[in-house]
Image 1: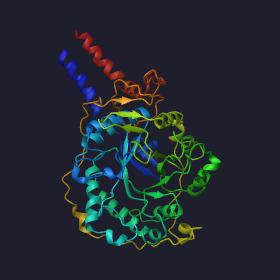
Image 2: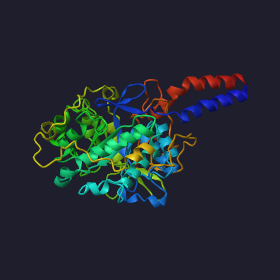
Image 3: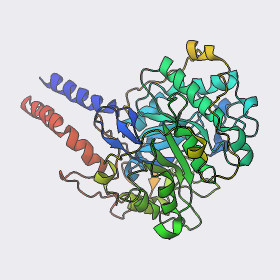
Length: 471
């Protein structure tokens, strides 16, 4: 009896270590849990330690390759309430199984850029035809192969601010739709589920025509599944009236695809008060916006970080982390899970795409042909096909310190039950009482409370067996 009970307890705990979030799908202008059908709104962070300069394929390292680093960051993000990270530069030849499984275990999705800063691994905005070739397709299809097996992959960005001036607006748009087409056709052929594909845009004069161009029409293959905007309009103590957010709502009110901030978090005032959180997740925006991704997790020379990483791998929470957590804790979770209405995909007319846009913008739907359609049919022969694995280590080997310099105790990830994404819990991580979390409605605390609530019945039953068996 004792042996059976112990093995049963181990099985219960192990089952929750490998429990997966459910893949997300696009339903109108919403991201939706593919099983529960609940709306999903991003509460996210940009995650690219060392910035673009940190991407070196020859190093054998990328942001999702070191499990110790991922344990540290997933634990810190779970306390913050993050449910999505955006990763810009990855090496598709590296194994990412354990890192992605760690983020999966705590209910964090990954939005992934298929491009990189290196030559041949992104589209040249001023000469797109020269960079849209077979080797480029091999790069982006290899990224698909490396990540298609992870259920917490939210989707792929086909481009990031590729259109950002008059010249690029005159030539690039059809190439973005072509790349989206190629990615979707490759996914349909080689993945076992639909994976959303979209674009991350610059917040400039091209933002509206780019959104209109990418989301219109009946060609679902080349049409964007979602549209991200890198926006830094709200700075310091801005208000709804002074920030320009009303203009964003007016511009995108009839979106037919999920719309979100793929980057946000102006840093002209430090520490950042993050007042825009209340606006983004409030009643005036939530009908047409699906949250956003704060720029960024680690402190880099650009001074946007919420966490600073020392040379030995220890982490220190910054004041920005504290203020961001405070704002996240005020989000009305019931409000943000309410489905938005959205609109039907409009026809791709110049009148709709250009509206009042005066500068040149390429509106053609005569898209460039795929440079090598055989790659879509046969695949690129990737040997690195990602899959979830058991997460058996929960504690990070690195130390984590509050913004006041106090070391936090017992920093570990807390695996969530199946179907659950992470949410802000009310925790104040830098509190002097060592992160005492507010009790949830079941009397449990924070992230740990969410797990205890989901496991309590099973664990209690096993413990009863242990006691009866004389353990």
